[in-house]
Length: 450
Image 1 (cartoon, one colour):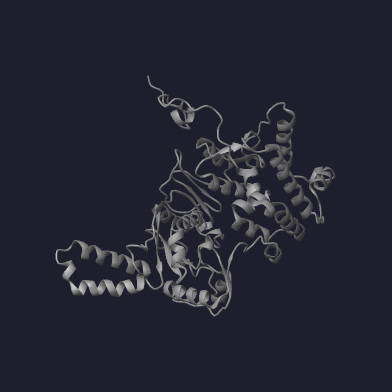
Image 2 (spheres, rainbow, N blue to C red):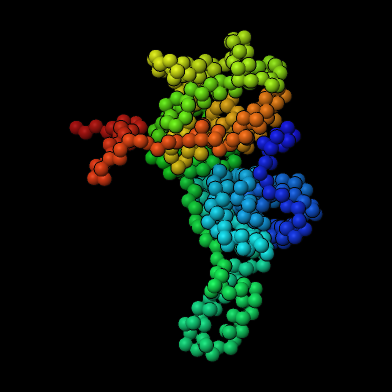
């Protein structure tokens, strides 16, 4: 993993904590949340304030995430919004934290100038002992305050001010006035500089969780299902359909019925053939690396030339993508493939839906030879897979990601997953869009009447 760290591909964009004042604030917050403290004088933190160095020091990578359910966080600066989330147990956690920071950025900037803000992503479940418990996680809300209780005291002062203004004898209540003055010493003038954080509630219907070997819960769908990255979860679940990744036909039908995917070569706004060619390069690199071929300094042209000398060693995924590229570049008949073909999911990407990141994450599991999509969409899986790769592939992956992806992350993401708006004229408001056959009759056909 050292090669990844040196190239900024692991633990990248973490926020350094080096000043004694920030370390002291962090320790106060850590003591407040977990009853622990660090003896380190400098370390790095992610968006939640988790530090891999402190995790190693304490021997606990989940010191801010007890039971892996209600993620706690420590904010020292609003710049943490740019950092990744390490040791994530839910795919939605980083988005929730990022939205919280950006929504309250002005207030948090003022609060973190003097103190750390500590909080928690709270839901109604405190321990996930069975897969069925995951379905009780419907909403997530954030609770946060400074370690000195600035928000709590500000709310208390606001309540006192309201009493002072509305109670009949408020103007003459010396005890009330004294309480207001004493509280204002810590909070300042809340009427001119209100101290208040917006604590939104976030819906959590479709998400991935690391629990039970990795589960994708798609509850908010016309045709809901659970997809297991490992073994199917045991016990009764609220959803009827539970698949694992080996059930490729059923997974493909689920994605199709819910309009969650589209063919790469037919997607708007991207060069589909170029994307597939790059996937072919990754397949060639994997094949050659496993044969012990040194790929150092190899260009795309080199890989494609070397592929011709190892045609018999290339897997069926390569041949399928080659057929798709020929169709995209020269026309002809559309390659007819079934979803049980090993290369089927390599030809797809997530459609433009609110769940496209989750779908691309699932596709990364189904396309293990596409190292770029795996790195972008499912880093935990990438790091886990990387450990078992031969040294030749590790060197190639690190070099490619550092030299071709990391130099323009936004551009690469747009080229792969960007969606252009439909240029068609919108239909008049009074005209209802025609329903798709599946939406009208369901995936199992219409019920005929006599």
